[in-house]
Amino acid sequence: MSNSSSTSHFVLLAFTGTRHLQLLRFCLFLATYLAALLGNSLIIATIAWYHHLHTPMYFFLLNLALLDLGYISTAVPKSMVNSLWDLRDISFKGCAAQVFLIHFFVSGELFLLTIMAYDRYAAICRPLHYGTLLGSRACAHLAAAAWGCAGLDALLHTANTFSLPLCQGNVVHQFFCETPQLLKLSCSTAYLREVWLIVASVCLLFGCFVFIVVSYVQIFRAVLRMPSQQGRHKAFATCLPHLAVLSLFISTGFFAYLKPPSISSPPLDVLMAVLYSVVPPAVNPLIYSLRNQELRAALRKVTTGWFCKL
Image (cartoon, rainbow, N blue to C red; front, side, top):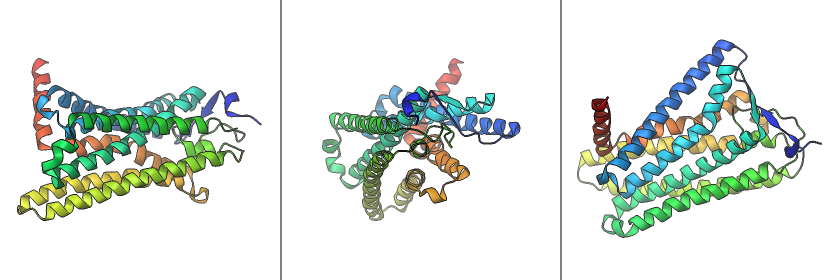
């Protein structure tokens, strides 16, 4: 029986044996990655540059953009290199790093989205207490708690996953190192420790999702009492896309980690992984930030200034 310490590398899933389709996947991933890189970098630069955007909402948006940059940079660049050079190997350390970072950014993103939902609830439903509930110190503490809890969650999952004995080979049926796929390589009942840890994490994340939904329900109730029809339309147009992307992120992540083995298949697993690891970081800049008029105006000033300098 071999264990994880004797495994020097893992073999990732090849999307297809056809070279043309591999290059097509490279182009699609490259376009998505560049869009996410550009959108999130612009948001970070704009919020950091303009002092009038140094408010709780934009502070949390900046943290979300940082998480999205790290999230999409964890698996996509390696997958693009593999497609371009027709490679499949990943080192043991590289695999462990991917597991840690995926868990870190997934947990951090959901914790931060929960905080952002609370921020919107406080701003719309309790505007007179907003400055007290979300002062600068409170915002810093909330953001630090999100990053810290995400790091602890990722550390527990990574340590538990790579402490398991592996005797089912080293082929990971995914385009990156994903915990459910690594558990399939274990031949020990010790993998149940990680399964229960995943279940506990999912319950915690589901609790965050319920909190977000309840917050938005309260927001919608407050919005429906607004006398202005234009104001109601603007609020719904902003909040509903948030919930749509969040639901996609949560549902595909839950399905990837909790689905029964009987319905597992490489094409389905890859589709779910793309939907929860590639799509959200690319569309979040559009959904959460670029729909904001104040931020759009600041972005136009930043990009205009850059082009004038060029």
